[in-house]
Image 1: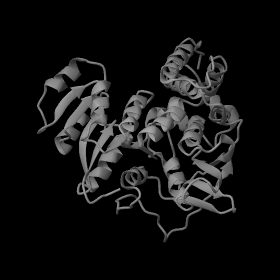
Image 2: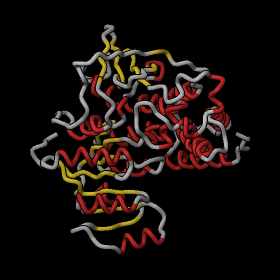
Image 3: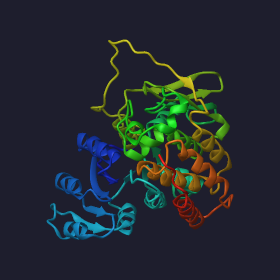
Image 4: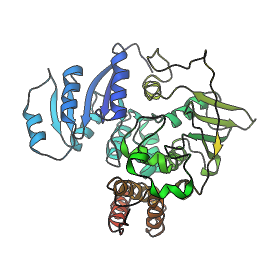
Length: 393
């Protein structure tokens, strides 16, 4: 990528954790990048602060219209900022000539629409929205190939794999992709006590600072199950060539094992700014203010096999990665809805994987769904979970 001219960037989901980290990266490289569009769902006070600082050409709120949204839309402009509302405005901005790179950090399946808009417009998509690949991975990758778009991962694990693959120039010599997992906040708990885990305990992640939903996913390791599905489509690697290990230190972000037995890993302290910056600057690397390894201090790096009894979600991930079709849409929707029930105190943590298994087993499978079918299955799965009979916690 030519960094001799400023690249125009859209940050979708700018008030979330990935969005804020993205803005921090872009703040450090204003000579190379210009922020032309930002979007948020509902954190209007923070969003206005971002508008005041970066003066994007377009600022879009996607949340439902309310008094607060109307007040924001009618409020003061920040320089030449055009205040807009709705997902259609996001899609129009993404497809416009004023955007070269899209950072897709919208949370949930809602991010799929902007991801599709970015690839159909032939843009570079720095993708943090895992639902885009879990729900419609095959479809999205085909659209990217058809329109000459790039999809570069922002997830630390998939970025690590992408970086390690540069050692061989591609996937032809790959034997296995090895995703690492922290094991979550409850990794050392006795299995029989997991069903009594409280919301607060499940949200106490030992190494990463993340949103509530993804932190619960880490506790169940559903996040890693979904990452298996992502890796299958992003790198075109069969599910049986993807492995997962527990790595508590979160220093090795993932590894690639090649056919000659060599293993290439990407290491760094936990800091999402690094994969974000690499997705922006690839194939170049620029200086950064990311955390550094402390080479003058001892460090132990360890990994362990995943216990399927402790983390039953992993079996779901590999099954869906192998079967494809509508399975990803159903698993993702069922998990999102089940996690919300847990956060509301209506089910136990251990019920999440059980609910997802039940919904997945009872859905009407389609091997080659179109986008409309995927969205229908998403809605069906959410309705099924909503009918789940809550238990007494």
